[in-house]
Image (cartoon, rainbow, N blue to C red; front, side, top):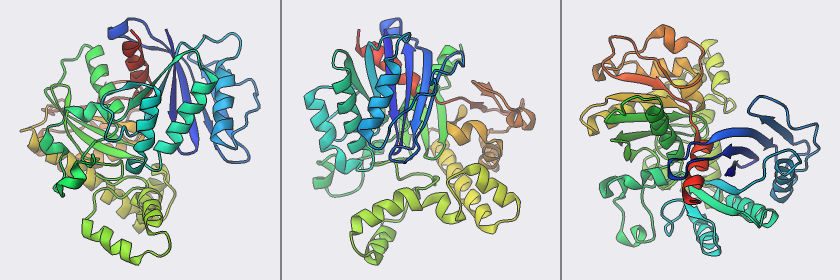
Length: 397
């Protein structure tokens, strides 16, 4: 079965094709991947290459003034002669809303539930629905599936999901959903596939533009830092993480015009490390500035790493200890300095990095803890698209 995976952002669409064999025990093999970025811009960028590194873009002219044009360009590219026929399509969808549980084959009822979920994720859900509708129109003869970033966290106990707010809002579906679930699940799967005994008490730090820390016991999520939306938890590139609710009330009183819209834009695009550093959402640039003596950049890095350290420590005590820690996501995988700074002071939990292996450039699953570390520290790449292909293969059986 050939599964096309669509992983969309606010201005980009990533896509990849997997050969999925094995049904319930599906083990997807990537065949190609690509990205169309700059949607809405005058000069969109299109990348498309095979698993062997061969360029498949062929100087293709793409149009992406609108989401509709972008999807048309992607569909035309993957339907070109010589490429495998699409048998099914899987989409990464951020939020399922209050009505959906588990990954879903897309039906008219599921699409309506996703539209109803817009208040939970107004920045993500409308675009996701539009992309699904457009691709379903262009590929009507195949099955389409929505895979949610929240499903991995459905195993959390009620005490972890529940907010201490009036019941009328909890009945509307206001609770802690958690995100980066596909990434966390891919970590668990990769550990098992590597033949490593799955640690009973595992902490996963997904650090990228968006960041979260998740506590995992016996392969299942028991708590995580993100909540109703991907805005809360630890400090992120453009999002503030957890805030005093009174601060939000204060900010509401300061806003003029469309208060909700302005506050939403601030919390999602103007807060976090960009607000502290005054620089772009680029960890390399922030670290370079901090190294050159930029006080704001240095503070941004310290606030970020401190928030992640607190989350790891808190979950370790929640679980009665930690047997392994995993760094994943763009920053988690590639920024050795962040890994070192996050773990500074956590030696009491048995977490000690090996400076040489931590600093070495490498790919794939690897151990970066020192021999004297009683808790293993891993770096494992996030494989969200592969997890989507795996779930589609399982649902399509």
